[in-house]
Structures are given as C-alpha cells and as structure tokens.
Image 1 (cartoon, helix red, strand yellow):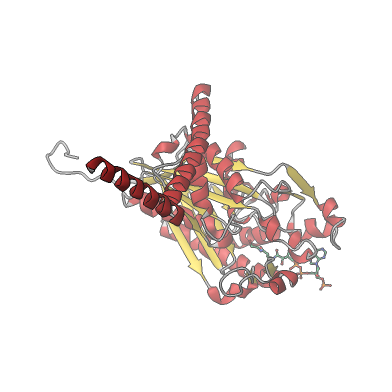
Image 2: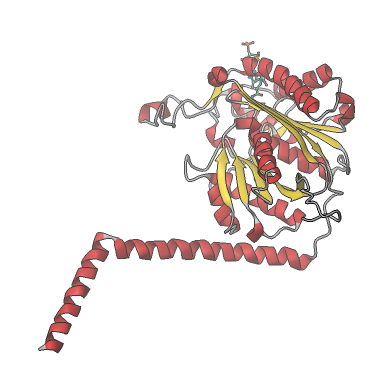
Length: 403
Ligand code: UT7
C-alpha cells in the first residue's frame, strides 16, 4: 500500500481471537455416581484433584466430530463470521473420531467450510495452545486470514471404567476459537512449545496404533485404554507450567506483574495452585473451572476461556496467559493481548442464515458422496463392462447404418 510519502508501508499483521464457543454432552456424572462404579470416594477425588463432576457422552451418536462442530458453530456465531470464508481448521484432539480421516476434515464437512484446509493436531492436552501458535504463524505470515481452532474430546471412550487411577479424572467436551488477521496491534504476543518424548510412556494409550495394532489380545488386556503414572505427570506438570509461563512472558517482554488473567490447563487444582504459588499469582488472576468439567484435555483451555469471558473476567487490553501440559510429554504457553470488547449483539436473522448454511452443508456433503459413488460405479469393472456393452451396441448400430 503506498503511503502519503510515496513509500510503501508494509503494515504488520496480528492474530486476534474474535470468536469463542463450547459444547458439552448432556449427561453430568458426579463423584457420588463414580463411588458406585469404582473403589473411590467423593472426598478423595475432591481433595486430590478438585473435581466434583464431569460431562460424559453417553449417547453413542456423540463423538469428537459432533461436539467439535457444535463448539465451532458457537465460535463462528460470536464472531459473526461466514463459514464460507474460513481458510483453515486446526482440530486439536486426543480422542479423534478415527485415526484417519481427521476429525478436523469431518468438522470441515459438517460446517460446509468449502474453502478451508483442515487437519488434526496431536499434542495431547497442550494441543490447543500448539494450535494457537500455528494459527498465529499462518496469520502473521499472510498465509491465512481466518483460522478456526477446535479442542474436542470424548476421552470417556478411552477410559478403563474399572481403573480408579484414571476414570475419575477425565471428562468430555469441546471448545473452539476463531482467530482472524487484523492490523490492530495485540492478539497473540508470544508462544512457547515444548516436548520431551522420553516421557511418552508416562501417559499413553499403548495399543491401536501401528506400533501395537489392535488385536483380540490387546483389547482383552485393556491396552487401548489410557494408562498413566499420575505422580510422575504431576511432578512434570508443576515444573513445566511455571517454566513455560515465565518463558512466554519473557518473550513478550512482560513480567508476572503484567498478567491480568492466566488460564491453565484444567487437570488438577493442586497442580494449578502449586504453579500459582511458584509464580506468585493471586486467586483473582487465575481461572479455574475443573470442578465442573474434570480434565477435558485439549478442550479444557477453550472451555475455560469461554467461561472466563461469560463471567466478565477478560477486558480489552488485558494480558492473558494460557498454558498447558500433557502426554508426549508436551507443554505450551502463549501470551495474548485481549482486544475484543465482548460478545457482540448479532442480529437473529444472521444466526438463522448460518443455520441454513449448515443445513445446506449436509445436503452438499450427501451430494458429494453420491456423485463419488456414481463416478466410482462408472469407472469400476462393472462400469467398464457396461461401457463395453454400450460400445459394442453403438458399433453394431453404426455397421447396420453403413450396410
Ligand atoms: O492432562 C494431563 C493429565 N494428567 C494429569 O494431570 C495427572 C497428574 N497427576 C495427578 O493429578 C495426581 O497424581 C493424581 C490425581 C492422579 C493422583 O493423586 P496423588 O496424590 O498423586 O495420589 P497417588 O497416585 O499417590 O495415590 C495415592 C493413593 C494410592 O493408594 P496407596 O497406594 O497409597 O494405598 C492410590 O491407589 O490413592 C489411591 N488412589 C485412589 N483412591 C481413591 C488412586 N486413585 C484413587 C481414587 N480413589 N480414584
């Protein structure tokens, strides 16, 4: 763009969060209910983790795609953003609907985001912050104008409901944010990503991948369920949450006193409180909502972000820190200068218009599937045989005409 002095002024681009949404299954499972299933108590779960209840997808039709799609739709509604303009969908998940196709692609189809690329990001509970980092890089580099980030989990399907060490900790749910390019300074200021694969065995689903494919034996021995060394993960978490937060603040040229709100991964209240103590962060600067959700892995930070906004805990120009840790082992932190005044009033008709677009997306998806089937049948052996018969008939008809 030519400036008034005739020189070209290349404006910087910033990646802002402009929409947010969450989705949860209907069924709440309380600690008291878990007392009926495994050898545990409400008192143990509350005192060791802080968790009081979690949402569980009991309806078999609910999965990472359906929850993620609902959260994504809510985020697009808040931003009042047309799905047809989306450039990219990054879906962070530890419980994808399938190994492939990606849950991101299936959400892209459900939304009818015809122009958008889509993929899954596997960095366990750090995945959402990893996704923010990638989206920010794409936007700042001018490769994308809008990126939809989704954290979606149905971890209950990977839990051994007879293992009290794990089944009381996790919950299902999804959260999403829309990130958009803007010339307004702010948005994502810094990101820190980390990994230490030597700790891969501390939190894992051992079987079902290419290393230990699913067999009758792996299923019988429960190797497709989540296994965790809770104590080791606890020690790792309390260290990296603090280190990653300090590093992200340092990169943004900020100190701990500049933080207005920290949204940590919601795994265990004791981990969060230990980090707060080490960082010297008071209660009013940290958002905790794991009491109601348990650990929803990649969805925990975006669900907490939505609640923090609903409760008026974020204001324009606030410095927000989001920090996560999880299997891999992985960790990630980001600092964000919040620039959105809050959810805008969107006219009702625009909401209805978007709903109509989603209905059209279902029709579009069916039509695409159908046309692919027709195409396949015409190019299959049967199709070839049909083609041969037709060719012979035409040839026969041509010959009789010539005679
Ligand atoms: O997104 C990342 C996901 N993972 C995490 O964030 C996990 C991090 N770790 C933790 O949150 C904690 O280590 C746990 C909550 C998993 C466990 O708390 P802990 O204070 O480290 O307990 P522990 O593992 O040392 O277990 C203490 C006792 C054990 O009994 P013994 O061996 O002392 O007799 C466990 O068998 O508590 C027992 N226990 C339970 N008791 C009642 C373990 N789970 C339960 C349970 N109910 N659900």
